[in-house]
Image 1 (cartoon, rainbow, N blue to C red):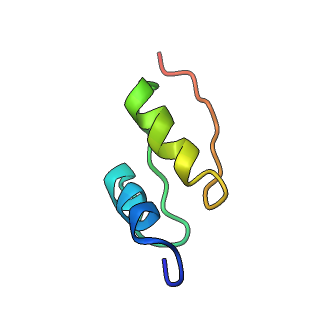
Image 2 (cartoon, helix red, strand yellow):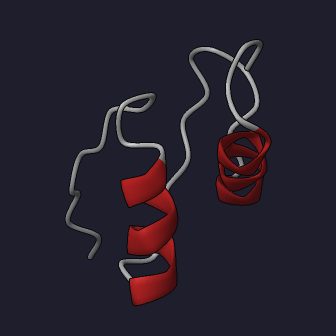
Length: 51
């Protein structure tokens, strides 16, 4: 997270991402989609089926 804006760093930490290679599963809610949209250039997003 060196060299990125403070707000983007906070979004990554809020999503539970802190290091390269971290994986998290979050709910598909408007708040999470907005946070992901702000750091989309830094992360890879995949939709998964749970159930």
